[in-house]
Amino acid sequence: KDSLREKAQMVDHLNNRMESEKQDAEKVLEHAVKQRDDQITKLEEDIDNFQRTLKEKETKMNNMEMNLANFRDDQRKNSQLAFELLQGLFAAIAKSFCTALDEWNEETIQNLQ
Image 1 (cartoon, rainbow, N blue to C red):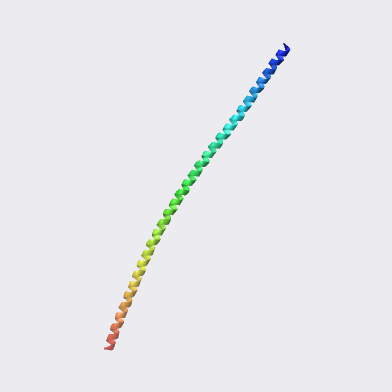
Image 2: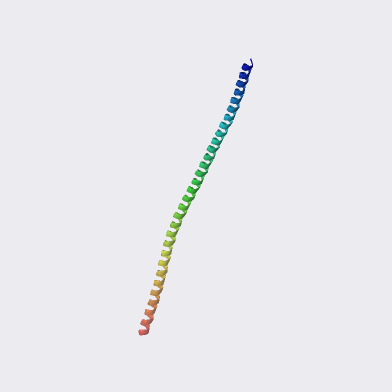
């Protein structure tokens, strides 16, 4: 009977030990699953942040390209305006010179007569 009782106690002890190890293994597994889930969540957040940053930079780049195009257009218009102003200035100078030359010619002709 003692031998049977000792065997029964040993079986109970082994069962308790196996149950304890099973619980420990489940805790380790739960912890590993939680870590994996946390890493997946972090990676998803990183991807979202990266995509948002990329979109912001893309928008910024598009705005800069639009600003550059507008600047070039303004420069072209300003160059055209400057050319037209210079043309007008040279025309006014030429007209003034011609008028002065005509007056000088008339004075010269009157002085010769």
